Length: 406
Ligand SMILES: C[S@@+](CC[C@H](N)C(=O)[O-])C[C@H]1O[C@@H](n2cnc3c(N)ncnc32)[C@H](O)[C@@H]1O
Image 1: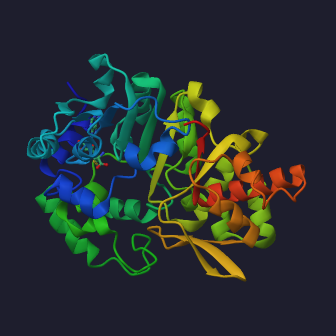
Image 2 (image 1 turned 90 degrees about the vertical axis):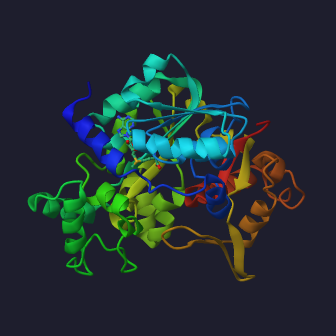
């Protein structure tokens, strides 16, 4: 028997499946490409050392209406288990399963708190937009950690506190008006939205309401939810530590990159802080993160964390992230990459560009540095130069780092 909060959450997702069901999983993948938590997209971020096995055992915890099906369709070599409280959402997923004959997809109606009862281990656990709806998110992450293989990786999405400030103000108004997650509440919410002023925190800097408010399921999920909480960066770090896990990187570092938002002495001041403090500062300044997408692993895998405070990075294999382009002119080169909050634009020098041109996804940094164009530099200077470039490119999210032989 579930507690009253979980039962209210279940009922909401029975009535309003989320995300709003898609028609065809194949068409969706053709149009939008893989989800950012898909191992075919995020592989090197999940396992810089190389994936632990080809036939990954994947758990989509709180899979909603389509996520598990999209992952199973795009990863036919892998087995995918999708679990969710909502029978209605699982029925949508099952429709995709049948249409695309996804024999690698297993769907179960259950709480992720009970996942241990399956007596199975997973190489990849995807849990996006779910843990912040649990009455006890710590218990949820702990339950998932218990079924994560020691070499496994988890992709998590939690709501962002700074970026959702406006959401909580509007939720508060709707609660006072007695609006619940039902047709009557939806009517009240739609009416209220007509009165939200253009300067309200709910409105994005581009002057638009969040895309999610375009349909009933999105309005209920964002504004009428019976249980949701959001996280600031330090709270995420604490959440992960409490579960005995290790933070393994943001899905896109650019959303937390001090270099994009500061300059001069202030940038130096911020960059002098530990990384998690830098991210907290940027998050509080920009307010762009209404969601935090990140990866976590077990302490056994912490040795594969990307870091630049020892010479280990010389064995890293730099990989330019899809969508990153070199532009500008000979006097002012820039790297650009599209992002939901405006292009990520990073000025780079000619010698930095030459180094990045050698990044083919196979050669390690030390192999790249042995190229004739870098040998005139003194060895120590060369190493220092490469470390500084790679760290800056890592902060901007333009470059990801695998390991030699992965
Ligand atoms: C916002 S939706 C996210 C769906 C999907 N993960 C995605 O990102 O598209 C949240 C889903 O989590 C499910 N859920 C909430 N609490 C859960 C729990 N304790 N165990 C399993 N599923 C849960 C809900 O039923 C709902 O389908």
